[in-house]
Length: 159
Image 1 (cartoon, rainbow, N blue to C red):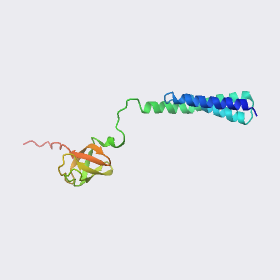
Image 2: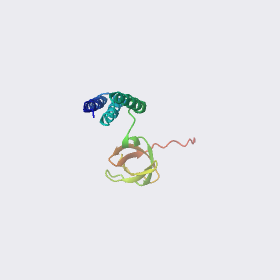
Image 3: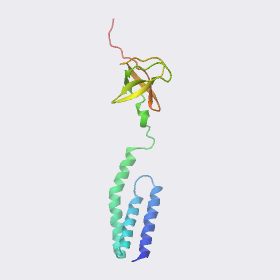
């Protein structure tokens, strides 16, 4: 067994894996780390050095062809500075329907339907909100929505 080349390929794999940590999300360097790992397996199986280089090139090319497009898609899917709401903050600004009256007390809650889910909600203005009313979500506090009565659009009747 050619232990010298095994350690060289392992060193190459580790070096490229480390370099991937300092490059931005493209999975370019890790492709060569994969090639180094494949060549290290070849050295472990005691194939010739020329075959090890072939395994390194083939493993790197296969990893490049697979991982780089994935890295590009990931980079394009979440551009830097994207301010789209995530988690519970995505509900802020949405309209919900009151299923169970929301009392006016500061810590009292009722029940609202927001899309398909049911949420505990409290009134922002500390006024009671009746069942069936439309409310706007203005904040999220833990597992509760803070809501205010929606501005009712005019019905268009003119007197």
